[in-house]
Image (cartoon, rainbow, N blue to C red; front, side, top):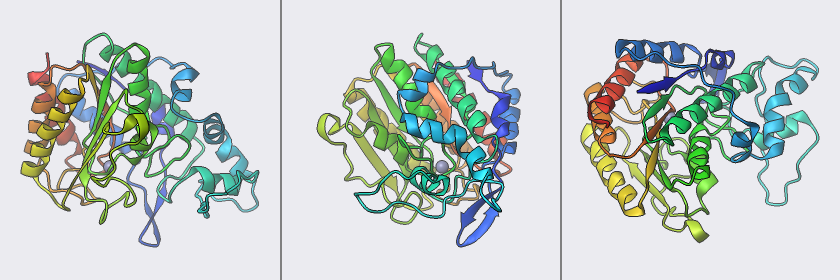
Length: 341
Ligand SMILES: [Zn+2]
């Protein structure tokens, strides 16, 4: 299986995020990629470096002013008196008649949806290379073969013009748009422990792509405000958005059953290709503590998802710094390659 990774993604390695009122060490640091790469090496997989994707790939998903903000925010922030090292929003628009401000502090609030997504000096370059990685994988998938993109920062919490939850550019949505541009009818299956709220919002009114997310009950877990079963899409997208929340600390059995059910929905939709938002933070030892899935269960998911018969772009999402991250990516991809055609 082709795999892709861009070393420049390490330029984004945030220091802090807000956790229960304290600035805690950020768990989405560049070491994550090293642990994932070790897992790939264990399977004999050597990633290729992705080419730079055309700007149109990003513009298919994100607004011009948001892309401009991501590229320029850190430099503008650094000009502020007594500025910290990272852009951290300290106010967010709440009311419907909000106006887009000129101030970088205001714009940070407009475009950054929470306190988990600090923007540092290398964030734009890192996020941009992660998106390139997703595009490279999707281009392989468009030819009928599976491919894995080691994307970090992850992407599924990023909306059209908002960052959030460690995500800046929505790599899975960008990959889906590559497939759609080539005439495909893809489904996006998101198995990260968190609901893919950014991806959902991007495609919510669209009927040409199915979005299915399996995640921990958002009433008690991030992202809290979306991910409920009643959110089914709207307009042309009605019925093309399926949320399958599971109770907190769900283990292998309900998680694997939900994946099988999701594949039934994907078949009914008539998808001809799959974008998989692959979060390994479902594992019992992940620091975020949403599910209790085992490494064996993750391997089983790989076998199930490798056996769909659909060309699949595997896009790395979460899975934070923890010992088993290497074992888990090796288990998933090992299982996937066993059954993939
Ligand atoms: Zn996650």
